[in-house]
Structures are given as C-alpha cells and as structure tokens.
Length: 144
Image (cartoon, rainbow, N blue to C red; front, top):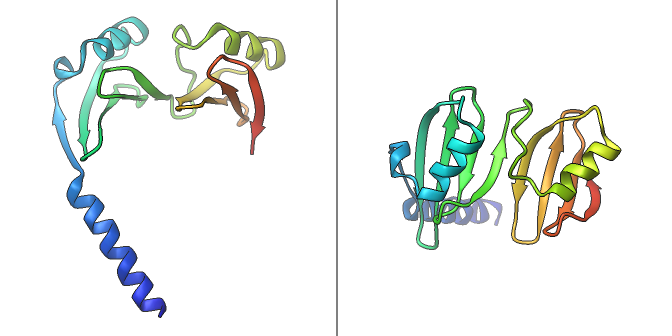
C-alpha cells in the first residue's frame, strides 16, 4: 500500500512539472508596473536574471537582483514577495501602518522579507521574528 501511495505522489508531481514552464526573459520584458517597482525601490541594485514561470492558471515573474535579493511579481506586475535573504530590504512600498507598528515595537529591527498574500502580509524581521498583518496593516500575531 505504501509503495502505491509513493507512486501516486510521484505521478502527481510529474504531472504538475509538465504543466509548469519556466523561461528566462529580459528585465525589459517584465510588465510595466514591475519595471517601475524595481526602478523606484531597487535603482542601485541591478537585475541579475528574470524567470517567467507559467502554468495553466497563472504567470509569475521571479527576479533576482545583483545582491541576491529576490522579488516575485504577479502576471500584471504587482509585487507579491520581496526576500532580502536575511538582509534589510527597502520599505517605501510597505503600508505605513506596518512600518509604524514595527518602528514602535521593534525599533532596532529591520524588515528582511515581506510576502503579500490574498488575506495578509507576512513580515520577517532581522531578529528572526515572523509577524502577520491583515491587508489593512493591522497586526494579527507573531507567527511561529
């Protein structure tokens, strides 16, 4: 029975891999809002490479910058995630209520990662804390 489950899981993963396609594209091929976001927030951090990830339901763009920072964009070019790889990231695009909360409660910490989901923001700080906020910027909890 266990071997059967392993084979079924392997087949399902192979099917998903066949439906997804990744291709390297030029930064100039990103949607205009993504280009604008990068030029505004990362003007001194060159684009190293861009991956266009397509599957049957959606397209995303994964950008790696010269310093290793990774930025993910939706099909329309809206940012979804910024990962500084444990380094501080720019914050001008982050809702002010989130910035104010962090400044008040964690004044010595920097934001190293942010992920904007359908229902919330997930924010990682330089001290390792993972904070959750609703889309309005209201603090929800420390995620462990």
